[in-house]
Image (cartoon, rainbow, N blue to C red; front, side, top):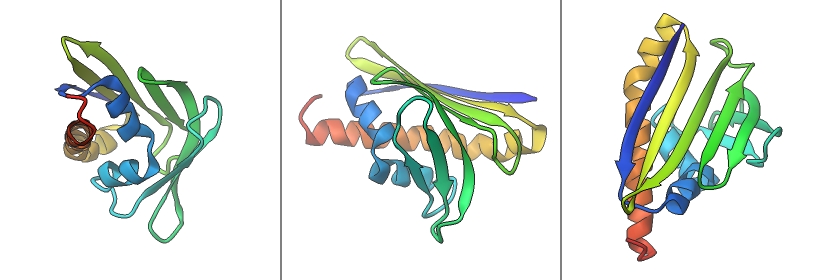
Length: 141
């Protein structure tokens, strides 16, 4: 089994990164890298359900919000993903007027790992772009 981990620095405060991770309209923008029109359904409360639905409304994967700590940590555990059990963790930390975002996805079988390498890198870059744009609009950087 494989784990995919990417970290990057974002020129925006942690609360802007958090907003991009937890606002359904913004999630739809960065998640489109995985599948155009995909939508998240969740309350973003620890222990609550999370479901990703296709544009036609069909469930794509589902699980639980395993951790949700505002501006710090968001973790989904997928026990009903068609490709098997996995998790997705977004860790946020502030340093020197920037925010570090680490995205970890796993455990993945080899085929799933290879298939997600490129889109996961694109997702984290899209999150960065959206957070920096939002920070600029709101005048916080």
